[in-house]
Length: 260
Image (cartoon, rainbow, N blue to C red; front, top):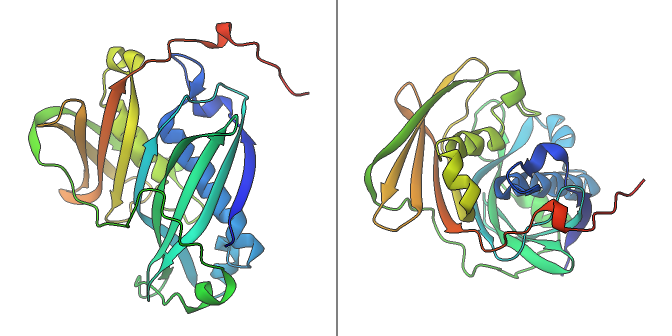
């Protein structure tokens, strides 16, 4: 079994300003970085795939938060591995640790896309270069299904700017999730945190596109559906399950030691 891990320190941009801890949705950025580093060790990073006119994309994320989140500047460890391969799909499972405890885990579905045809490429090279580890932290990988919506809760529009773009000049995954989170009231976010996050990316978006995020309630308390559209066409579907914060400590209560 082969797993890849890398340690990080929670940076200011990824901090929840209400309690100086890692924003749950920002944890995705560390996972993407860890995956990029892992693929680089196998000569399959984004810049390697450019030579073959290909690129990586994420199509689904399923993520749970299970323990206390780290404070700003604290050290975390992201652990990721290839857990399942099909003819076209590449699944990675992951765990993120803080003080030797898993505070987040889940899985991500990746594809390698041909730049010209925009169609998925076969995973033969992935199978050759990566060792499979069949540990599934959330059980069997299942197809993303949105919960049934109840009523409209909020709506926001956003015009894509340069800060939203990723290495491939497409809208960064984090920008979609940020937009969904922005539809939650600040007072609610002060007392609640994301427990489960599911994302389905349907289409690419680009500079100057205008996105509309409509958030709906469901029949489950604190479970919301966020539909992001461009010109009336679905770009990204997200569900977020929130729970009341039980850890009320702040950075003032913690003997923070900055590593020089």
